[in-house]
Length: 323
Image 1: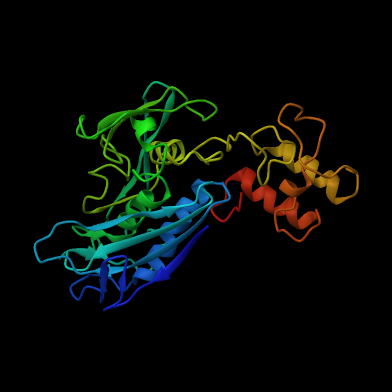
Image 2: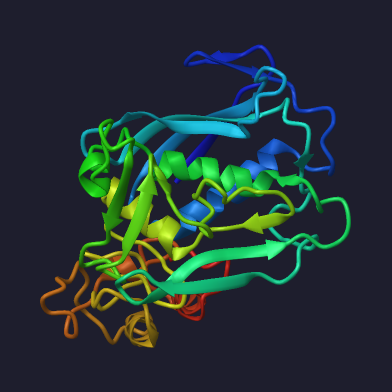
């Protein structure tokens, strides 16, 4: 869960002086809607019970400064479940596109996913769409930048305790390293070259070239896995595959580590009273037990046809699915 805390012109938070929006931007959108859309991308990618309080706003870099933005965690709890962070976009950058409908992408062509095998099987390394002729073309998409900067809050950051161990980078190496995805994550054995807290390759939105103009980039498997390994998340959602986890999670009714029609069947049985035992089931014995908490998707304390309907959204991969 990402709690968005807006700062306005003249407000200072942790040495960052926030400012008014840019006056030369194209598009009728606003930073609040854009940040909420970007946050949903990361909230849907990570299932762990983590709360991030994110302070954000526009920031006036000196004229000519080409940094599009900046972000990172300021404090991480010892158990990793609460994070305080800040983020800004640079209002002085001259070429912003502020999408008034940031949840959709009417100004862009169809998204294209590019896959590659980095040692652990074919996974999505790029997920992007080119701008169609119009206002967005030739400009920097604020949604893409917001997703990128949020990545530095969610996991792509040296403040996370596992960062140096995960990347093998250091001052001596110029912070050039590589991240190897370990089991039980999907695509374990995948090796991602890194530079600071970015994947050092073209394609991912978190790469240094991931926020170039005239293109909207969203999360790839590489972006999500790198954040998960550094921040040590237990459960992530990757493209074309059900979530794989190390412990039970919402929607995994039979605790087999994925969300499938088998979970729907078990939840349906529970909704009509055919499953009596309610509790958390261990992964060691996934087929005969029932996780009532995982089945109660709307959190009302009961397993009903409403939960079954919500679970079906997860199985078919609807964008609004809550798993």
